[in-house]
Amino acid sequence: MTVDARCEQTRAELSAIHDEGGQLSDRAAAHLAECAACAGFASSLADIDRLLARDRFEEAPDLSSKVM
Image (cartoon, rainbow, N blue to C red; front, top):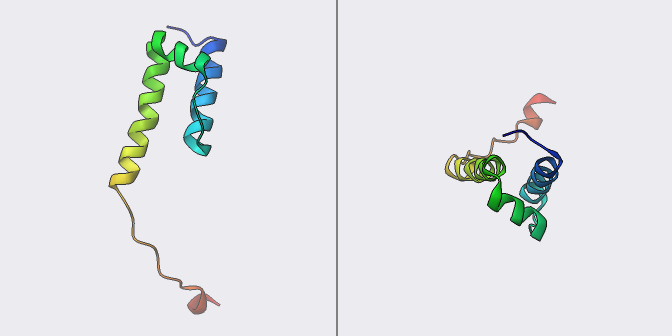
């Protein structure tokens, strides 16, 4: 399946919601219901969140006094 303007708009909306929060528009939700490629893109964003939540890193010590 090729990426058309609806896919580009939906993926841009999904990315913005992923980064900044918000609600998915009705248009984008309807597109996700019928486009497997965009549904896969949305699933990939959720996978990223799961991986980041699992792999928490310790905060690095403040070494600025030793560097200055």
